[in-house]
Length: 171
Image (cartoon, rainbow, N blue to C red; front, side, top):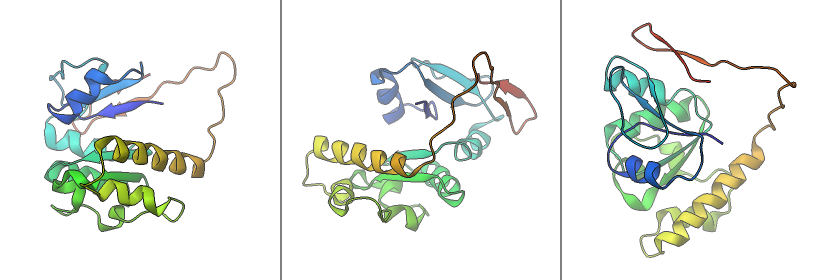
């Protein structure tokens, strides 16, 4: 599992400071640094270009509150078929404002309705909503194809070509 943030202060910084996995990356514009635990990956000449890249590669996106940038990234991801799990109770883009994708606010058919309701409920505890999100992500993962392991000794290099034409080797 790899986690990727946009390298922004606030929720993403809190996540980075509490993430216990070594697979933590932050997409930042070229020449900038997040200063968070994990590895920065420079993409795009500026924040707008970085936002355009962010919605183009993940399988599952979790949104918490957010503004127009979160809504744009969720739209880009949802339009290409990625799963979006909005923490609706947090407001902002995640509750459907700022042109957030309406379809992402509806539970997929394989997700338990009571779990999806906990993403919305401001009366539920944060722990209940977080546990529901974990269950939803598990349900999404169960619907995804199982990746095939690499052959022994096979190396993979992922190159991200930024909007400015730079190439960044990720792995």
